[in-house]
Image 1 (tube, rainbow, N blue to C red):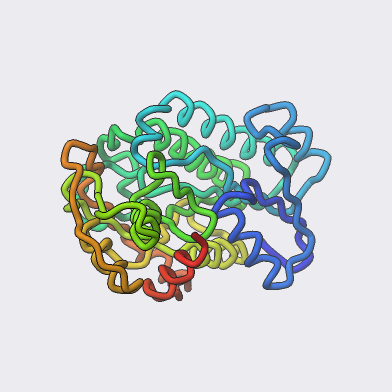
Image 2: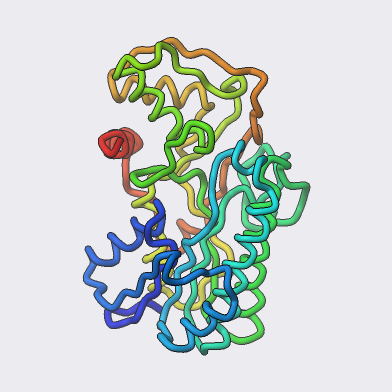
Length: 305
C-alpha cells in the first residue's frame, strides 16, 4: 500500500508511462523515489536486479520498464520483445519477493487478450483465445508478468497486481514513423504536413480497425489510485470508452488541431487486431475513472512535438 513516506522504485522512468508516473508522484508530494537509468541498472540482468532490490528495499516497486513499439517493430524484433520483457518482468517480480517487498504494480497492455474478440474485453477473457500474431512475443511476456503477480499474491499474500491499459499516448511517446503506434504516428505526420514537408496523411491498412486510447497522465493517476488500495484484484483493465476507427481518429485529431489534409491508405501494410475495447466496470467499481478530455490530451501531446 502506497503511503507518503513510502520508498518507491519507478522502473522505466524515462519512458512515456514511467516519466508520467514520476511526475504525478512528485506533484502529489511523494519524495522518497528511486530511479535508475538502463546504464546504471540492466533489468534484464538477474543478479544485478536482485542485488539492487535487496540493497535498497523499496516499499513499492512499479514496473513501467519494457521494450515497446508499434506493429512493425514488434514483427521485426519478436525474439527481443519476448526475451527482454520476460526477463524484466521475472527479475523484478521474483527479485521483489526475495527482498521481502510487499507492494508491486506491473503494467501490461491490452494486447494480452485474444485478438479475435469483437465485444468489450473483460479481465476474465485472458487466455481464452489466440493472441494477435503481430505482437505475440510482447503479449506472451506480459502474460507471464500478470500470472507471476497473481500467483505471488495468492500464495505469499503480497499486494502484487497488474493494470492493463488500452492504447496509451502522450508526451515522451515514440514518434518514429517506422516503429511507433498509430496515434503518435498520426500526430507526427500532421506536424510534417503543417511544416509542409509532406502533403498527405497516410494511414496503415484501410483505417477501419477500432482502437481505444488513454492519455498517459490518466494512466499514471490510475497507478497511484490502485497503489493506495489494499487487496487489489490481480488484474484490472484501464480504459476510457474513447473508441473510434483509426480513420475517425485521424479526422477528429485534424479537427482538434485545425489542420487540413487528404487521408490516404497504405492498404498492403499490416492492419492489426480489428477491435480492442476494454471492459472497465471493475476499475469504476473500485473508484477510478479517467479525467482528461480527448481534445485536451491531443493538444497537450501535440505541443510536445
